[in-house]
Image (cartoon, rainbow, N blue to C red; front, side, top):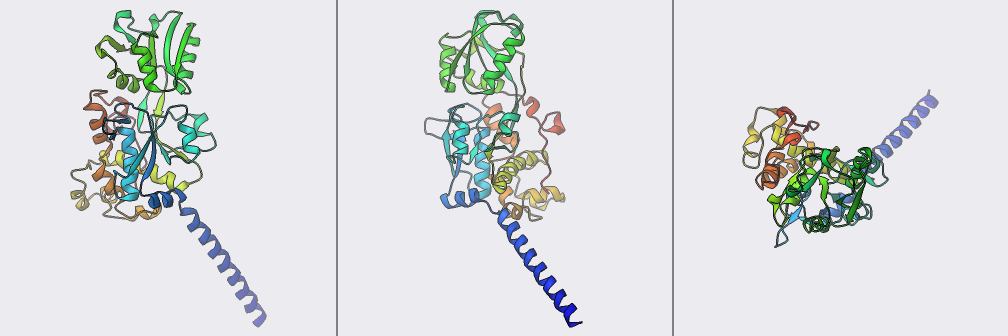
Length: 347
């Protein structure tokens, strides 16, 4: 009998050690090197465009605004308690992914299209969509062109090199049997300047980009964006692979902004929503549950996002609608209002 108890004791002792090791590994897996380094530095490192109004654009004083900028500000509010604690690094389309995988930035929030080849690339993880878009073309009104069906062989097209835009343009012209001359540049402002100076017949990029860049032209009213959309361009933030907790923090920071709008929570009423009878609303403002613990954050992380940055609708209105870039939201409306914005519930 003693021998049997001895064996049982040994078994349970080994089992306890195994469970302790597994538990330790699980806790270690929840830790985030990026989160730890961000807290230590005291700011979020965010890669943005070199200047795209409505998405990521700096004014004369170096103050950044835009819906992409707000994603990084949301993360800063969640992690550091202050949406202003962000260091923005302007990047060209060609250098953006290298900067992320090399560790120069921790979030790339730069009107970047989520594609299979990019998502499957070692080192990159897309965490969501903050703008549904599609590629189009802009031409001068004086050309008389009102549709891509009027394009003729021999036209020249300005485009950013190293983008899905360049590939989509090639596919479009090839499929339609149109020969063309690509006029390529690395920086977006170089593309705009070339088109504005008459170096090409058309300028192609995402339609939101065309609307935004049109405001930079010498005479914006002399140009039109053609009605056709030639591609799907789901744009969203990207992080490095290998840090699941940081990935979740960025993903859910964006999701909170979208879901807050769905439930009518905004920067002005967030505090008062703590007494709501709706459990989902109470979770979003930190009055119920312990959602922050799953991310290694306190329970007010989502409340800070809503109060300091606003919900998605507030961000869109402030940066895109009120600036006249795209007054109507189209597919970027909530799913409850006929749009595509639909995120998993925060529970």
